[in-house]
Image (cartoon, rainbow, N blue to C red; front, top):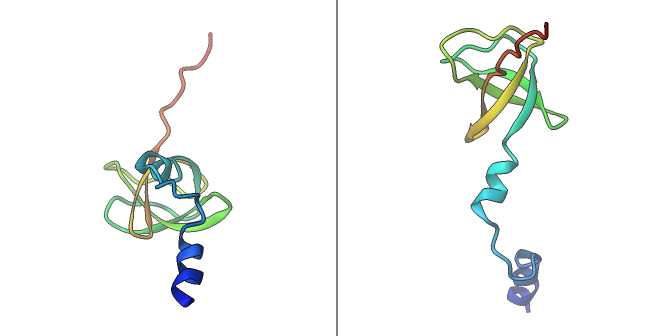
Length: 90
């Protein structure tokens, strides 16, 4: 009986296995740096309404308050990069 109960909890998706692409889309989007971010040191970003550890993918530092793009995740640390600058309209 316990196996049937817990088996039902684990299989609530109607038997559909999650697509790896569905999972990856959860970790893409824009975030706001809450602290300065460095390539080899964790900082913090606000992403999806929650604060996360983050590390910059580029060679430079990202200042707190900068909007960044989340490009991946390693365990509980988001990988971010600067958004490309848009050319000014003439």
